[in-house]
Image 1 (cartoon, one colour):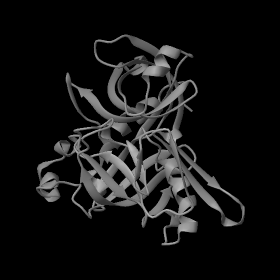
Image 2 (spheres, one colour):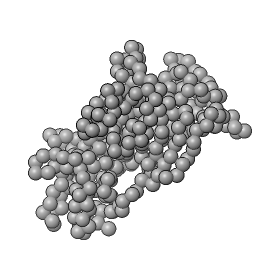
Image 3 (spheres, rainbow, N blue to C red):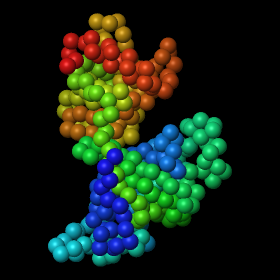
Image 4 (tube, rainbow, N blue to C red):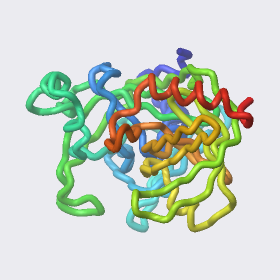
Amino acid sequence: MTKLHTFVNNNAQLIPHIKEIVSYFPIGESIDYYPEFKSNMTMRTIILGYEINGHIMHAQNQLEIIIGTRGKCFITLHSDDKEYEFSQVDSFCILLPGKAGEEYKLNFPSKASLGSRGQFRNGNAITLVNRHHVRGMVMLETHVRESVLPKTGYYRNHQMVLLDAQSSSLEYKEQRTHHRLSTHLPVKLQLSQDSESYDCVLANYSEAHLQIKYNRDEALEKLLKAGVTVILTLKLDHLYKTYVIGASILRNHKDSTVLTMREILDEGRSRNFSLMDALNIKACLLQHPGTQ
């Protein structure tokens, strides 16, 4: 793992770090996280906003970060028809949902280890994880500042949590831990079991992720947002095998999308996607004439 930066209590250096963070963890992005350095307890969440010097923003276009010459850096916030400019930062937090139900998907020992106040107790360490098409897996260490229940605004009456990132470090590691196959296999994509199916092509496959390509379809592009769950049907006719996979969208490119495999249909019932499933599919794809 390669360390990009470690935050220090130097406001002149902090603003460039914030610029990096908001580029890797933008508002509206679905990301993974885990509490107290327990990567076996990874859950999903979404970034709802930032807090800078007491001001909360919920849209990326409310924030401008200017890295000038001779070390002069500025942050400009646009809020309620007002503009605020800061040359130093005393507070920077990331805003997440406080109760989204992800913790209920954990097994009993994991849930018990969180305690009665859950993963967002004040002071708890929270590791945010996102996947970047260049950097690979980007990780940010944060600490819970506080939980809030806003009475006004876009998320009123929803439990929110502020994660203090001011004294944390930003790191990345190579994302491709498994060999990736290049292939050309027609697949069917659905957004639900009863929805319309779309003809796509499986282009790349690894043990954790796959990439599908599709003809330019604006209606489909609008539906394929990061975090959305889809159903893929892979038919390997020459082996008389069919795989039905539940996957979530990791990121989108032009005319293609990268998905994380979550579930698989097994004898009519859905279960978690396992390493054995991944290796089984890879072995079969290696028999497919369109695989390189």
